[in-house]
Image 1 (cartoon, helix red, strand yellow):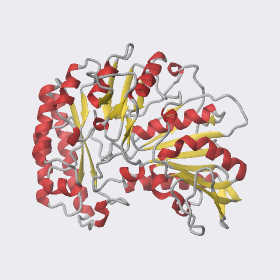
Image 2 (image 1 turned 120 degrees about the vertical axis):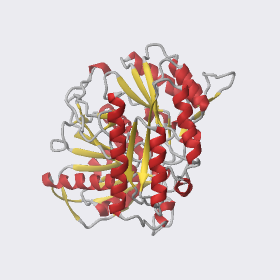
Image 3 (image 1 turned 135 degrees about the vertical axis):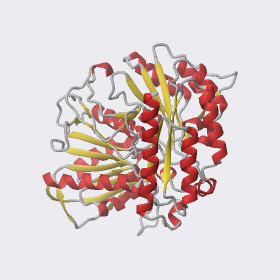
Image 4 (image 1 turned 90 degrees about the horizontal axis):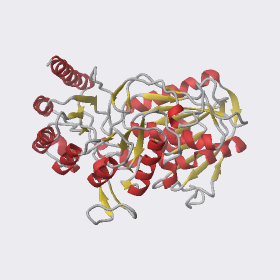
Length: 477
């Protein structure tokens, strides 16, 4: 990569955005023109947004524009939403200004990412008019404070709102921020009409249809997991490369991370469904695949038709071997891995499979044992350094990248020096360094955020500068 990027966060997310717009609906995936942004890792978009051009059939349905913030998982979720909308006759607009509906697919891992979303939503009012309407909550978990009973998706409760809203464009908040804020999102921004959590995106067309009919605000959040059909809506934005979700959620509960609270607990898709999806993509011209998950190497699932060593229960390495055998697929890789689940078995599998990319993103976060324990990372400094050494020895020409955090609560100069020393020892191909910010629901939020912002900035600068110089030295060599 040409430059070190400091905007990536602990779950493989980056403070970036990507626009899904529309012009020509392709007859096949390979017909889809794409205007690409800069990418530091495959599919992880840098600051420059990319426009995806589609042409939906002309109907009376409104035009929708999707603006995506965050990680590859969010980018894939936007494709899934686009696919569902197109099937229902919605058209994809080329810009927010021309769209009837603007959906913001959001990231909640860092405060800076959220602030950027609120800022973007605020710009919508520059082309809005006034309108009144009610609030409709559709929530698997939310309780009616008056009736003290659970509300199901099939029995929404109507909340009356006397507020006047500056409206013309319909605005939707979807993804992790939607799950985080739920109906509180309307207080943060009166411009918002619908709120749909990441596990509820399968209901996006019903939510929009209902809003267009009733003009009542709606919230769809709280589902534990998606239906299998949601993972493949037959829409992708690339000619040669596609992302495929293999698992979602996280059980690690790192003390700083909001992911388990907005994405839910770990669940893996069946290997049969994953392989069927990849084969279908290959038939449409796709040559490269990235397997996605918040913690891909914890993947485990039962299979009815696929077997590994006589077993129907498949581990992550088993899945990699099966993907490697798919005819017509030229290469594949995966993100993101957790160090506590990485081992020599994974490294040997990567080395042995000719189609598997020799790339491993292994977030370290800190080089201090004391901070790693506070973070609940599940490994030590010594263990991580050993893993990195083994990976480089086993996998020829491995591109090893990482995430690092500075300014975690109570981080001392000694803790920081331990992190700096680890980076010097390992010599990553790329490192994404960011400053700690407290997140709701997390254990770290209960800790005093006692590292001064100026100190965080300086530590961030030191690590970034080191990585930049290391990159230049390796390029010269």
